[in-house]
Length: 498
Image (cartoon, rainbow, N blue to C red; front, side, top):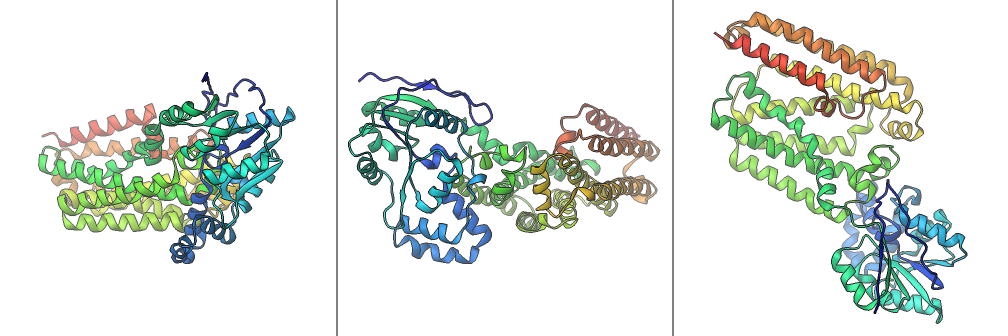
């Protein structure tokens, strides 16, 4: 059998459409993983957990009546907006071109008919819908039977994405594959003529790292700050404890990031930047996310319980509970959300002190609270600045309890918080603790102006609309921030010299 295929190298944001494929009559299109970059059953499960958790106990009883029954119950209890689903843009473009050419296109999916019809109406590309009906799960051989009955002997092509589609491809004139694995390509090519491969599978490692937000692990470096300020960096045992605390916090934080992304699927898809996150964009399957969360949490807790002081595990659980509360509710309450963020940063510092058994000064905890409160405010402020001309961002922030008119107030409170942090640092310079740790404490006074400059500069950038995302992450890519950090480090060394 002669077989050939063309590869569309674009994924989502860079869409290239394959050259025209000769028509073979009817065109049947799968939905989950093909038309959509996600599976609506898992999308509905996430919405159930988020909006109707009291129904969760019914799911095992629904499963006893079959998968089709479960799908119908989910759709009956949960409203899914088809406009907020991640579509495969290359597939949509291809189908639009085929439709304009006069080709009849039918949606054939194992998803429940109620949700499939909503998607079909939203796109306006399909002449008919074949789907599960609450009794029959339209997948595999069942889907093939439905297609053969509907086609009534006419030739047809089929677009799919999984091994469950192999029976249909065997009877189709041409097989069109979406994001296929190498194994699926080989299997399909044995029995089918493969004409087009749409949306090649993106590298999973890249999607995984982005979902775990490895770049955000830098925030957990705060657990090492007490060790640095106490001049204990030469104590290898304490350094090891600090590194283990960093790893434990990073694992738990990544789990919380994934939970947050699952709960925010709909709102993230309305945001100009967050819609590109792996879960929102459909680059990471929801089942994989569900598997990673308990694994990451368990790994972090094992490190905390077995290798670090007992109180550290308690703080880690407090962090987990606080971040979960933030993801589920606190982030939608204006002002309380930024207070929670500032508290979580400060909690990292406290956890580092416990893990390394290094006392942390109340002065520094107070400084941390006000300093990170300022950064939390600047994050919200920068989002409000962008929202002035972008309806998607504005809708996203309204769900968080903010309106554009709040920008001036956030700027006022945020800058005040930053300057209060510097004031606390100045008061600390006169405390007895400074003279115990530093031989030349006078050098530390120069840190104040440097910190004032950095806080003011961050707010200037935010006011000018040049600060995007988390200011802590911004600092890690900002040259002047590195220069200032180097100067602060040099001053600390000078102050410590005999």
